[in-house]
Image (cartoon, rainbow over all chains, first blue to last red; front, side, top):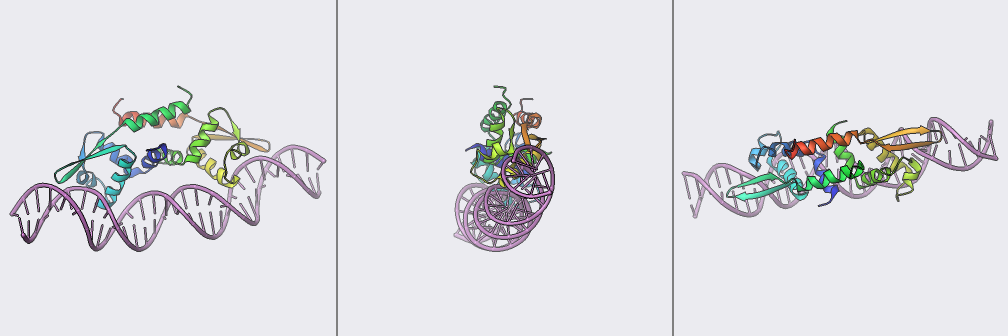
Amino acid sequence: MAFGDTFKALSDPTRREILNLLKDGPLSAGEIVSHFPMTGATISHHLSILQQAGIIDGEKKGKYIYYTLNTTVMDDILRWILELKGEN
Amino acid sequence: MAFGDTFKALSDPTRREILNLLKDGPLSAGEIVSHFPMTGATISHHLSILQQAGIIDGEKKGKYIYYTLNTTVMDDILRWILELKGEN
DNA sequence: TTTTTATTTAGATATTTTTCTAAATATCAA
DNA sequence: TTGATATTTAGAAAAATATCTAAATAAAAA
């Protein structure tokens, strides 16, 4: 919800990789897990942190939970950086 | 030097506040310390992390070390976010 | 209904991070 | 040169983080 949560969420390489995967469209938790050498529990934890930070959304469809990017928080980050650069 | 270092550097509130201070121009380590309720050693550590990440530069002038923003790394972050948003 | 599949939650451990105090280094002033 | 000031480095403790295994929950399939 705050910048801290966002940057903290983005500071982990696994989580950034998850975002890159979601760039091409929604994926279920299991599909995401299959891209990493970690357990489902670990990836679930990372997904929870990303969701908490508002960077992704999860929607349950039957047995699966599909995750999608939500870039509105990213816009806040963009603005913060531009502000820092004095280009705003 | 990598995204990880940059986001990790930005994920701490004290460090973000330091960057905000430097937005208005260079400051010595001591001047920066005076804005926080932490010891000089702690702030020195934060400055080191920011410098390691390439977000600030430090130049020694006699007894003092003046720190300045270096926003070129921020441009990489900007591009990464825009890329994620598919606006690029 | 029972079993299987998808995902999360709980609890534990190892690593990393933040912060402190004390000591070290470098520069300036007397 | 001696003493004071500015800053960093070293080492330690507490808190946060990433990861695992095992257990819990929920939905689908048999």
